[in-house]
Image (cartoon, rainbow, N blue to C red):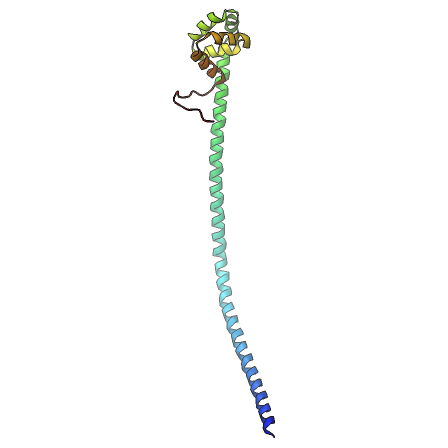
Length: 171
């Protein structure tokens, strides 16, 4: 054999040995990966329930917070509804205080005399009488009153809230 053939033969043998060693190393790495996966799979399986429980707890807490917020809004709406029902009840009560005969009497009086009489009356009754008068007669009576009392009665008729004199109106 010639020197070149021997070298070529050694090279091929070395290459084959290298391939065998590389394949063996690769197989060893694969076996190690399989062992790691075998260890990881039970860990993942064991922790999956805990992760699911944690996710469920977070969702449950979020729903409980939303439910509390909705209950708060319902309470506010119920309070507003009760306030409006009370307003309607008071309004109807004020209007019924003015008996038809009293309204008829005041509608036939002179505006200045009616204004003087209504100025000295309880404000709710006076407002009820004015509210039941014909608008033309009511405006004439209110015109004869002092402006502060006329405004007070108009506020009772419209059921406007009483404001402090120091309160500034904001638009």
